[in-house]
Length: 429
Image 1 (cartoon, rainbow, N blue to C red):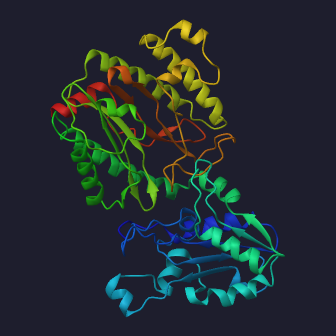
Image 2 (image 1 turned 135 degrees about the vertical axis):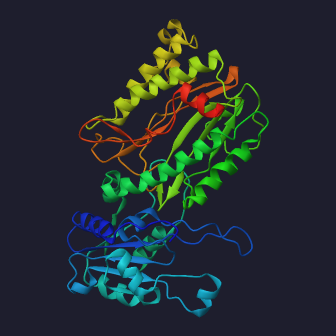
Image 3 (image 1 turned 90 degrees about the vertical axis):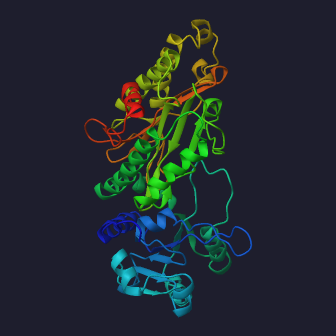
């Protein structure tokens, strides 16, 4: 692997926690993500199913994981089925897990080949009453997709209609939301790589460079530090482009006098970092840019301090909104009359700050978690207020990744320059 793998004990512990919440006499089936074709014989870069990785530690296609804690045969409690490699695969595709390597990485001793799955599957199904199936149930997933989990459900309904089907996501969303120390350490590597990329572009950006050139500098720093690549499509947005929240074209020149909003993060060992910084293209903030930036920074610091055990995400967002309302009044972007006449479902401040402040972070950039449950120690959230002033061709967002603890929140990106003076000094150097 390009990255340093987590100890197999992490995945063993994750499986034990999942199985402890399974209904009696049930099994759970997990399948790796599939290779997805682009055109002709090309394929997208393989990205592992996050739940498969969380439970097995294996980062490869064509894998089944079966969990059967009440199995009558002790050898069926945890089973892996992996792709059987051969000389042709080795020549054309390279290394694939051998049985012992898969066993060592996952701490699962019973490993078989993928082609053997059906023989085991029919035998196990005769001894269980229900099956947990893994499908993408992220609440922000509005695009229907027919991944391996849907195919498993179809097969179960056709061949085993008397068995109950259960949702693995309901258990895993709660488990994955709480990060172990090993996971936090892996995320910190991704964040440290992201910091290196940011410091690199501070000395690179100047009037006339193109957004795509800035993205190339970031990508170079990611890869040279053994990141898989970006955790998501980098947003490199200069001037007016920064007012487009998910701008990813990254094709415009960075002009003298404009601000450059950069939202990017490295992926390391399947874990994501998520950073946003806004810098002046010419290295010096104007007075107006500085005022707006510092207003956003004050909201960021206030919001960061509210990421504490027991807080509810919806209430947190409301309180951050009140802080932003005060700052926008000070910037003369909204008035007391605007607030008096506002629609409570879309407050006046939303004209300039229209998105949420925080989301779960982990194996996915928009990680799983229940937004209606109180924050718990071990959760990691982004903190990312923004102010977008289309009429001034200016968008500012500031974002760090925060670990919730039993005490004060820990800013995992605290070493990354954030103050106006820090940024200007580094751009002068």
